Length: 179
Image (tube, rainbow, N blue to C red; front, side, top):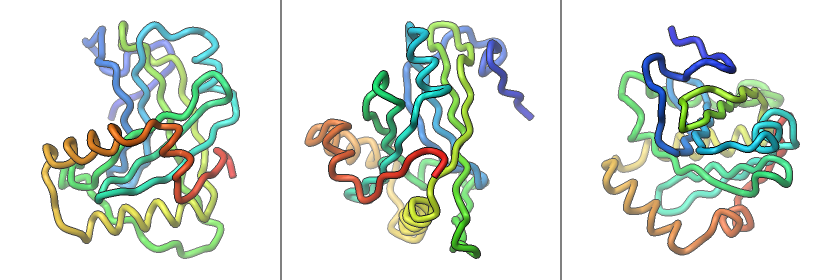
């Protein structure tokens, strides 16, 4: 079991990570991993403490989780595909059993140049956002399988059309972290 702690490397023995943003739903857990270079203290503080907003946009079979933290980190996004998750970690999200059920999202901010965790935050999505995101994942899981290459091509095509702020403006649903 991997222990994630502030001030420690995300992966032992790796002192550098690529810059990347990755939302993932695997083994029933929702995680947003932010690996960024040359983090400013205000960016770290924003991820830790500032109001967080999240959006959901879907196009051409791709799910986009949109996010921003305060005024410091503007809208950005991470594309997701059920088919990119290792088969043994795939769990089709169940229908909500209680109307107040919420997704618990783990957010991990890493300084990419060192691989060290700079912030960890746990927040929830509103029940409505939870249902819409789970519905989108169920739709992918029961739809036509597509390869990682096709996922990349589709995602890039959408990113060529829209900036993250434009995707947020087109979002099917927006929620505040903790709703």
